[in-house]
Length: 273
Image 1 (spheres, rainbow, N blue to C red):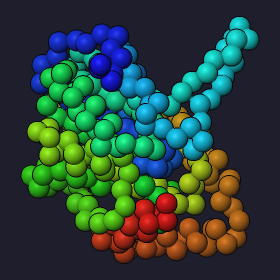
Image 2 (cartoon, helix red, strand yellow; image 1 turned 45 degrees about the vertical axis):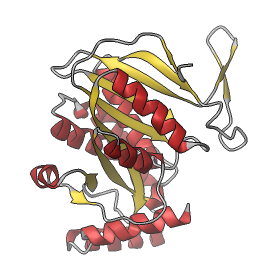
Image 3 (tube, one colour; image 1 turned 30 degrees about the vertical axis):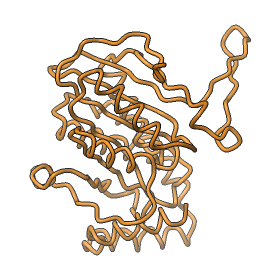
Image 4 (tube, rainbow, N blue to C red; image 1 turned 135 degrees about the vertical axis):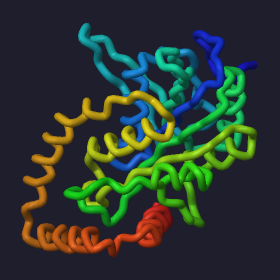
């Protein structure tokens, strides 16, 4: 039995897959929002769903109920969705899912087999982490790619050792399973952990567009970033927070936040989860 419920399985050529999961790997919703933006701009249509019934602990990640315009209730379960687009010069697959609680290796195999059946050759996964990053400065982007790609696009190499999420697992397993596999991670301010971060989303999209050669319009987020900046500025007027933010900005501007420091912050973040 096919673990992916296919609505359509298009014939693609040398396709690229963009993969993001909500939850632990997705600080500020930056990664999942970036993938969703790619889905929208590429006009990717839903072609498959991986049901999470064997991968989920529903007491940890519960299904949700919503009410539509007609007053009817709709029950939505955690899942992983596969979208496809032939809009660009290179065929594109976008995968957006909820980080599962169980059987990660099994899910990785299901997804890998599904991507291979679509003739996907390369996978770029997206993630976001919390760190000592001031919201008033550029968003740091880290990448896990071959040395030539890192050098070309100015990506910092991850040296992380320790706990990882589904994005790290997939990136590793896909690379060992014959795919060209890499990942991009955005650094988000830890003091804004509970807020969506369109600035980090835009930074991921800009770097993804360069690395993948996709014509992504990241400026579509400018209005959201402006509103976000005004809200954050209003919320960070407390004296102690203002002083702390000034310290972060000083360190950032003085280049104290070197790659190894960011890596240390990622490790601290992962260990606390």
